[in-house]
Every structure is written in C-alpha cells, then in structure tokens.
Amino acid sequence: MKRILCIGAGYVGGPSMVVIAEKCPHHRITVVDCNPDKIAQWRSDSLPIYEPGLDEAVKRVRDRNLFFSIDVEKGIKESEIIFVSVNTPTKNFGVGSGQAADLQYWEKTARQIVENAESPKIIVEKSTVPVKTAQAMEEILKMNQNGKKMHVISNPEFLAEGTAMNDLEHPDRVLIGSHESEEAIRARQELVDIYAHWVPRERILTSNIWSSELAKLASNAFLAQRISSINSFSALCEKTGADVTEVARAVGMDSRIGARFLAAGIGFGGSCFKKDILNLVYLCHHYGLPDVARYWEEVVRINEFQKERFVLNMIQSMFNTLSGKRICLFGFAFKANTGDTRESPAISIARRLLEENAHVVITDPKALKNARDDLAEIKGAIDFVEDPYAAACGCDAIAVMTEWEIYRNLDYEEVFSSMRKPAYLFDGRNILDHRELQEIGYSVYPIGKPPMVPL
Ligand code: UDX
Ligand code: UDX
Image 1 (spheres, protein in one colour):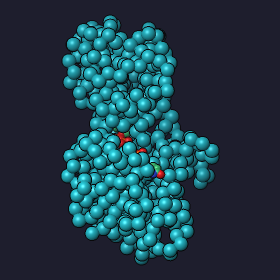
Image 2 (cartoon, helix red, strand yellow):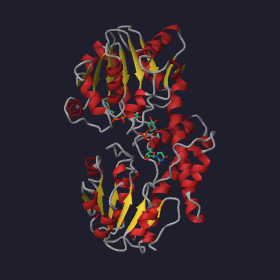
Image 3 (cartoon, rainbow, N blue to C red):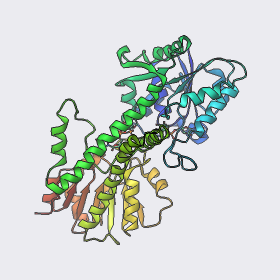
C-alpha cells in the first residue's frame, strides 16, 4: 500500500486522484486544499466541479481509499508520494506581469513540504509549470533539515475538461520525467507502477525532467495554434465565399494533419491555452529567443482578433447599433460539458456587447453561477435565465457561445415566434442547421461561411 497525497483539489487534482483511487484500490489517497469550502464540497453530494461521470466515480471511492481533508501538514507527514496540482496563474504584477507564471503557490507548497516532511518523499509536479520549475523546487527542498531525500518528478496532466474522466482512464500517453540518477529513476518507476495498473505500458513515456515540463507547454501550444490557424482561415472564408467547414474537412483528411481540433469558432478559452502560451512567450524572451516568442504570441493575438471580429460582425449586421437590443447568449462555459468559464470567450463577448449598450441575456445548463461571478463587476443590463426558450423570448438575436448538445435540439420555430423581428442567429460554434434556420426566417451568421438571410 502506498500513501498518496494530492495538494490542490481543483479541476486537475480532483478528477486525477479519483481515477487513481478507483484503479488502485490498495493505495490510500488523500486530497487536500487550502480552501475549506472546496473540501466541504468534495465531501458532499454537490461537488465543486461538473465533469461527466465524476459524481458516480466519487461515490464509488470516497471514504474507501480516497479522502478529502484540509489538514495539509498531516497529509504531508503521512504520505510517500505527493502530487502538487495547485494553480499557476499568469502573474498580474511586477516582473513578467501578464505573461510569466505566478509560482507563489508552488513555492509556498514546496516550503510546506520541507517543513513537515519526516520521511523521504516523491514530489510529483502535476500543475503545468515553466520549464526548470523542478530546479527551483529542488533548491527549496534541499533546505530540509532532516536530510530526508526528496525526488521531484514531472508528470504533466493532459486531460481536457468535459472529457476528463475518459481522458484519465484512457490517456493517449502518460508522461513521467525525472533526473537520470539511479535513485531518481527508481522514484520515477514508482509512479510508472501506479499508472501501469490501467495504462498500457507502451503509453507510459519516461523522459528527462526538462523535456517533460516543456512537452506540456508544447502540446498546449500546438493545440491552440491549430485553433488559431483554422480561425484565421474562417476570416478569409467569410471574405471569399469559401466554407471553413469544407476547408477543414479537406485539410483534416491529410493524415499528416489529422481531422481533430479544426473546428472554427469564437476562439479558445479555458484555464490553460492562453496562460501556457504566454508563459512560453515569456520563457522564450528569457532565453533570448524573441523571434520564437513572437511566433507564439501571434496565436494568442489571433484568438483575440476572432472574438472581436465576432462582435463587430454582430454590430454591423444589426444596422450598426446594439443599443437597447436584447441579445441572448446560448452558453457561457468555455466549452461544452463543463461549468468552467475561465477565459471563456463568452466573457469578453458579453463585456463588449454591454459596452455597446445591449441588454445581455445569458443561459447555460451548468455555468450560470460562474457567469454571475465573472460579470459581477460589470455594469449594464444582464439577465441570467436557466431555460433557453425563456432566455431567447423577446430577444433580437441569439449568439451561440458554447457547443452544448441541447442547443442543437431546440424547437427553433417556437424560439423564432417568441423573438423580435428581424431575428438574428450568430452561430459562434457552427453547430446548428443553418439552412433550416434560414427557412424558418432567421438571418443566420455562421463562422467562416457566407451569411444566410431569410429567403
Ligand atoms: C490549473 C490549470 O488547469 C493547470 O494547468 C495548472 O497547471 C494549475 O492550475 P486546475 O486544477 O484547473 O489547474 O486549477 P484550480 O481548479 O484552480 O485548482 C487549484 C487548487 O489548488 C484550488 O482548489 C486552490 O484552492 C488550491 N490551492 C492553491 C492550494 O490548495 N494551495 C495553494 O497554495 C494554492
Ligand atoms: C486543454 C488541452 O486539450 C488539454 O490536453 C490540457 O491538459 C488542458 O488544456 P481544455 O482547455 O480543458 O484542455 O479543453 P479543450 O478541449 O482543449 O478546448 C480548449 C478550447 O478550445 C475551448 O474553448 C474549445 O471550445 C476550443 N476549441 C477546441 C475550438 O475552438 N476548436 C476546436 O477544434 C477545439
């Protein structure tokens, strides 16, 4: 039996530990967090995050071999392996403000481990960190007075929200980086043994520790770059009469490119892509590579351009004024199947619409609470309505922000009859049947396709 601790009970730490607990019933896992409310939620029937399949999995393992606690110090003392998945947001002050990762929680956690460790520990970096973070961690851990051995291992998480449970149970790969000394490789092997309970051995990659840290940033940068690439083409499609879905299909059938992650939309959101790319940009500057920095910076810039383009398109097509018009946002989460709204494109789009004096009505099956928090400081007319039919009633326009399945299956005749005319539909995710909407009478504005005005 191993005693495993995870510090940080968020979107990464929570689901990751639930899956380890389920797959390794003989290990005992404790998840701690500095936020007592969050721990209370993990212990209750109303978990702090929504993830398909998570509720059921938690019920199977909680208080069996998975425990939630606020006692970080006790957790450190008792465990042999410590996963660290505290957040590493973009720094918003001082040197590197707006780009570098803020590692204050990391450092605090490292110090807490040093102060409380009474036996050797394997410390696993789960959070995405700038390359060379392990080195800083090791420096702090060296201060350990008891002379206990601490090994820092990098094991970045590749799960995507909305599909986290499946991603964790059937990962494309698990990456485990360590130093090359015999002891470090032994420590790394302990982690390999844990994952080998359910992940085929050929999918467990081991590497040097810096490659592992950098591979996580690189993966997110490549994924985000694909989205900015297709979004940049969506702008060109709208000018030329090409259809971005057809372009993406043709491009994606090239097996060297692949079909996934080529959906044009209102831009990427989520807690990782922007933060990680900005962090990469900062690292490139730090290592004297301004050209590489500029290359990646453009991926973020195109993402901003795409959101702004969407808003400008709305203004232009609605007679150059949104003043007093009711605009219903279908979805607020940064993607479907999550209640998470961090960096959701809907936040900046809602803000921009409010600046234009529009009346914004927001509906979302899981993200209304977060949406309220995100817009709490923003002035303007905002309503939050659970039912999409009630939300759209009396509106001039609907703008699809999130590709929730329910929005594909609404009765759009009924919605149309309750809206003000002309009724506009801006499909920011290209998920609706545009031809059918046009026939009903909507003015339809997809992404990267010609607009379709009523016949
Ligand atoms: C996020 C990103 O998704 C991930 O890529 C990044 O590397 C880490 O931050 P996530 O799990 O989504 O991971 O973050 P979040 O849901 O904010 O969870 C972090 C948790 O750590 C929070 O619950 C926070 O209360 C906790 N925390 C933070 C501590 O327990 N101690 C601290 O010192 C700081
Ligand atoms: C991402 C990575 O996929 C994951 O491997 C990493 O561990 C964390 O960051 P996540 O942000 O949870 O995961 O979701 P993801 O599915 O990658 O979507 C990110 C954003 O890109 C969403 O806003 C989504 O709507 C958008 N997106 C995705 C597109 O606009 N088009 C696509 O084709 C795919």
